[in-house]
Length: 636
Image (cartoon, rainbow, N blue to C red; front, top):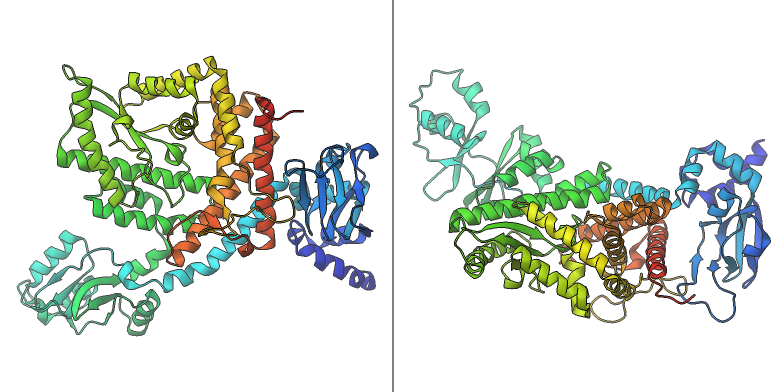
């Protein structure tokens, strides 16, 4: 028995390097290895094809490549007729599960070795191993989950490093609370209570720290001696407080606190006190709370506070990702927090510049409208308004445009860059009455020029941020009714969507950008996410799905039996992984101090992530193929 296990070790180790085998229980992996046989296929040889009847063998590529081909094999296949499998990938899982023939030929692209498993043993392994069964029943979902687990482990390993190496100057929550040495104990206690702080720093006339007084001092030192409330603070303070420079790290502050048994460290720059870091601040690095952040955003006193709170979002999102939140939950949380920030900005600007007479609803478009924002986002917004009694449409618009200009500028200051395409409420074309919005949308639907189609892909994802939702829902119902009356428009939208193809090359590699700043990179937003977003929008408009979120649109189409539920779940898993990859890119760029962008060097991916991303792009191509067939865009 031991000798047999030793013989199986090379096969087991080879399998462990790939999903899902690395997570299978040892007895189940041993069962698999024991029942495999190794086969060789020279370049060009067909392993299986539809004419051979129900699939009877599972193939696991050990070395080489295998191409799946549609068509009759005459002439070179196009990118839409083939895809390739690499070492570690299995096929034909769907045919094995359904006991049917494959739907395409599988040909060795180069000399290839495959492990082979007979169908009877395949079915026994399904019954034995829950991990293998999950992988086979929802292959992309299982791969996505495994990639997410690996990324969460990586983030968890790096998280302490990020926190410990953070400069103290970026962590100071507020300006320091200070007093002079002559301030009485009564005044100090009252000031600490009013400011809700646990310490106060005593400074001289040049703002240099000369002492510190804490709640611990109040309880331990003052209570033990006969001090009156009129005692000067210099008599009870701790002199010569420990300090660090703003560029010192959180780790240095933690070490100083541990070494001296203190809970506060002053931050000094050019001999002046500029802040105080407490033990609570440092350990809060690991615990930015969603509820706290939401409440703070909702009650922020000014734009500067909102700006600081939005920086905390990055840490919150990373912590939630480590703790197992799905990427689609995270992008919706980002959108929700951005909604709170926008509402607060609107309230602050109205308080500063006056309440307009006209009633308005603030709209979001694009990714914000879909609740799919990553940390890189700009403004796409507008207003739908109703003039006050006795007020003309133009007078109301002029009044609201002035307010919108202040709101857009404040949002820009908070970290929402102005839209380069001027899709903003301060643009008169984006500040309209209900009838005017109908007229504008009707022009796009009826004429369908390239510019109209581009506009529709942005504006038709509209959602209410602030104000009365009723006229917006009226507008949404009207859009669906009008689109149904002009079927040519959706065909034009579908044609336009086909112009952006997923970045899959004819051969084994990705189809990367050529030239420019992001040479040999993948455009994850335009060519990764957009095919899913565009396909879901078309399905939603065609079948009266009211949701604007991409996953909700796809699942809404499935509920209306417009497309199969299994296909939709594959598309949803794929879109989620593309969004996850974008967020990982943004995180890496933030850590490197780079501007955020949506380009990825595929050589930076590990084998599993590369495999899942390729499968995600294949799913994008399948969604495009479905839309193309619906509108008969491709012959045959």
